[in-house]
Length: 318
Image (cartoon, rainbow, N blue to C red; front, side):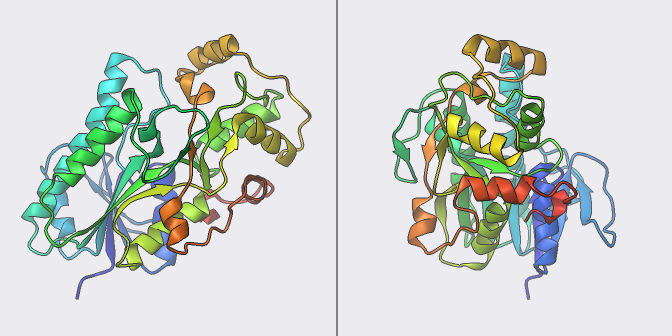
């Protein structure tokens, strides 16, 4: 019988840590592939196995034998200046890790039969008011190019008898270390919570709890395969998002942040100003048509749940 081990590649970041805790609560055994040192499982943390995320060197490929599923979250953060070096790292980290996992799967005597592959809703590019779902064409620019290369590496792999699910994930809201919502909340508490630019660009978001529940459904529902947009059903404009964030944190109105100041702030924070100035209006058509019920379909309730409990542990968000 196939074990309920889940190979969680890239499981040491914000999403991976939360997802690992969630999987344990649901009677799975996550095994984290990490570029850090290997560590045995403890009463509160899963086992970690070292890999370099580029080759099959080492003992980690053996972990795929008799595992229940692979979840591939690997990808260098996009929260950085888009220098040529960083762009190469963003692309290579995604493609190379997917290739290495594929090679390990192909060598396994009894490989997993389920593979959940992270992708990005940014594959649709930076758009205006058009509604984007699984049927929408991909966009133009660096992020769509990365998304297409990422998915192509996965789709071209010879993974016989494996159910594949591609997750085009939007902005996942949680309060874990290095999460974007944590950064936005800190800025807003400092009185800098105004909308950016004109504030009309769309923000597609999803509560971490709904993200985790979608992962669980993808593991358990044999009918799920192919591409899914992973986002809440009610995207909002940046102006509305920042208004609701201020209300949740009980902060007063803040003046808008003009584009030039966004660029200066991004330079100081060593990040990309486009992350704050552009967006896309995504909806999860397939999930809705297949009966998935979101616990947090609307932004005010999602923010209230995440931010109104100051002593809440990040590991309890899922």
